[in-house]
View (cartoon, rainbow, N blue to C red):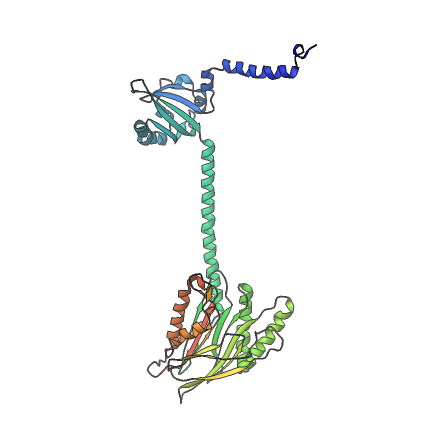
Length: 428
């Protein structure tokens, strides 16, 4: 039998399927398509009276066709709020534009429930241009409303979490500030014939710094003082700072020689941290001073353990570093050697101790240049001959000027002998 005489069953089925679909389309009426559409449709007269409405929209409302067609207006299907919005915004815009799309309204179900919808309407005109009726498409917005409500809940939850985080952060900052302050002296002691001033600049309120300073009487004539910086930040640095301060204080009271105090501190830190796999160390400058009422001068002894050199500003307007060579970092090696240095402060002279936060501040437009030791010396020279309190105030202004370029804490301690025209018995 020839191919044309033996029909392929597969070809027959393939040809029949399109034919059946086409026949089904011919039988499908426009009314059925309108009535069963996935969105709501309705037509109203210009006064809003409902002339036609599809089954989808009737199902959403929970009413029969005979209850609304010719009996109700479109606004009767809306909630009170939706009706108000329709009268004040929707209808006026539709009259002016002849078309309006995607306006959010709420339908009122027969059982009292609400259906959020998006409504698009267009005015149909006659051949002479007169408006005849309004055709509206109504889209179910319940999923969208649920999404918006969920989004709103999420935003409220995020806002509550942010507020709580800010509260927790403020409490943490307060606690850190209290702890930081506990690592510093409340006030500096009054030294007869001298003026003292100090300042601690916290680079970040969210972390504990490791800078420290202190000053205390050794006996009836002498005072001890120190300033330093421990490695690291946070609780570990705070613990190391506390240990360092108390060790230096006790060591200086036992033996006032600054070299001996640093040697004792080195022994304690090395024994405490060297064998634990997390070596800890610090830099420190330790000193003693003794005033001479007869001359109005103060003799100073210093020793440094890896710390930036002190600066001495003189009454004649000059400033110089006070070298303390040979000082190793404290706590790194078991038998570190430290060397001492001496100077005399005459009336109008000031001794300035500082930590490296100020010299390592980043400057310049791109914050890539360190402020440096030479710039600090030049700055203090501009304030030479001034009282310690005035020098510290000037340095505080300098620290503030660095802005975001200052990312490390800075401790400052100034000890000076006021000139006769500056002298005051009251320590600022």
